[in-house]
Figure 1 (cartoon, one colour):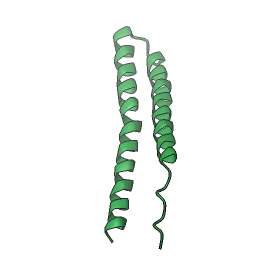
Figure 2: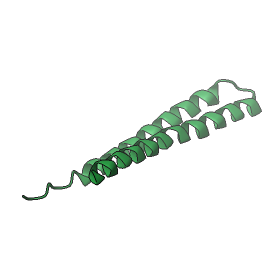
Figure 3: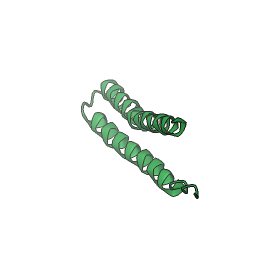
Length: 80
């Protein structure tokens, strides 16, 4: 029962980590683009640039994390 709970919490941790990895660039680049557009009075140029940078960063982070998880592989099953 303990292993099932550990796997469940591990999955929750992974989901939480991926969520933060996706939302952080969106907030940083999105808010940065809005503020830069307001400052330069150039709406929507930097909002769009920020959006594309955020999507690129988020996809890259998720790709790297997924690649690391796959590289770790699954643990071998215990012998009977």
